[in-house]
Length: 379
Image (tube, rainbow, N blue to C red; front, side):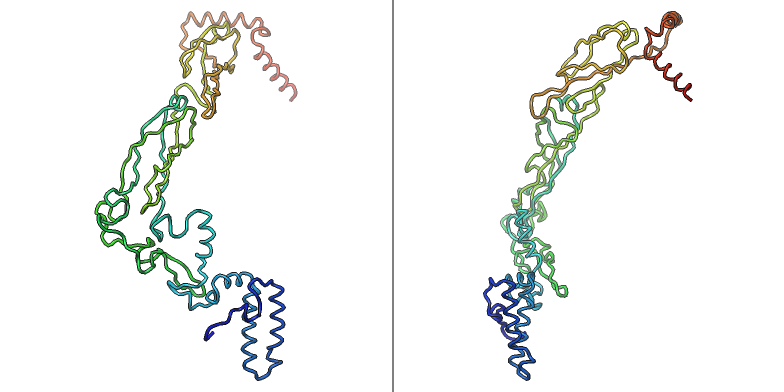
């Protein structure tokens, strides 16, 4: 529209705080007043009618009214929405105001303007440990390949004695606006590649990146009770940020190596303990290992396979608290092998003596055969 447009609220004779009903009533009154049917061949009334109609179209729509309140007439004037232009309803600005505040970072990054300042990436380090190390806790040294801030240029990327300069194409924002039909889209500035600045004389050591690759040595304390898959966060030990932004974090993920004797389930340890059938029958005493040393375990007579003996307090300490788990020993009765002729003869005699009274010596065997017999008779 040629010339300076009147304020839409002024056109309808309203305050900016007017309600939807007030807008509708004002429009109906003015539309009747300036309608062409009531004012034939009146060019002034015709123009005012169009002005009233345009004002109502905008203010009666909540989304359009919001854009108009924020950007004025420029919100609906494509000529003000070109590349690098100002005043248009840039969607990235509208959403950026909301989401940028939520996540604590606007398009300008952490410092330095534009998108030049970027937080360093988080790193993960897989650490393999023995069961004893995670049960009792330990301190170990890590060698972590990462990016660190360049000491030559202090992270600026510019040669010593020089400084990066603001990109004149995007005015340091790092992004430019490009017209795509009715919409304006925002994209990285092609001149500075979204950095918001240019480096005329790059640092020779880091080639203008502001950081260099390095393998750093870190000491990490593993608390007692940590379990497989647990992660320990080391704040600020990840990759260096760009242009003064903070470094990322390092997450040390614990992986426990298989143990030749014990298996861990939560705070408890489990182990299988084979014994020969003669000890299972008459009883005895065994010396068994624990992570705290050896202990003597009494095996009562007539112990069956699958029996579990619980040793209190011989498991794993809770990572938060002082409670200790237990060690559970699962009995496995082992059948002897490589028997001599004399041993076989003795076992035959022993077996014959057992067969004479199965009811007392092998109650589980007798009960099983009775269930098998009942099953076949039932069919």
